Image 1 (tube, rainbow, N blue to C red):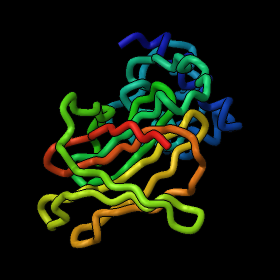
Image 2: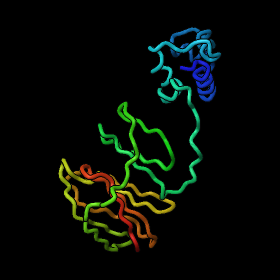
Image 3: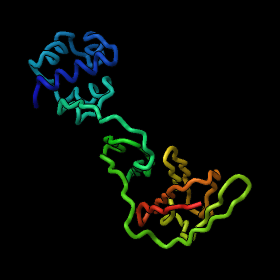
Image 4: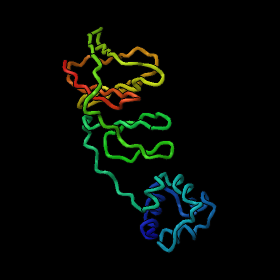
Length: 197
């Protein structure tokens, strides 16, 4: 561990939060001199303090331990590069448009990649009112179902959560613009289908 890098990270995060050394010290039940010592690179926090320190500073524990707070490159806003994350433990669904470190249930969650050969779903589209009604053939049982559908265009994402025993269909606003329909199967992973209108 590089105490100098860690100390600089602690100082940067503390200042971003608008905390004084005394306020941070009070939250950790240590003296303000101890916090000053860390920030000067003359020592590192005790292992018992790291979890509370990362919570108080609103930082990822691993990044804090590494002293690495490098910002991600700015997100250009291209929705075509959207990333979907599903926690393997609790099933939480997370969406991002830029590079990020995603953690859930204490584990790192990697972005889903579309399967090269998606399942044949026999997608059907009908125009209804001001929407497109899209249906497909896929089991929707408790142990094998589509967890979400996402319709992605160059400037927007429409995310629809699906549940077991639900009809395998979604309605999306009619926009007359092409896009991609992403479907996430709990057994076969993420699928990508090009939709042309």
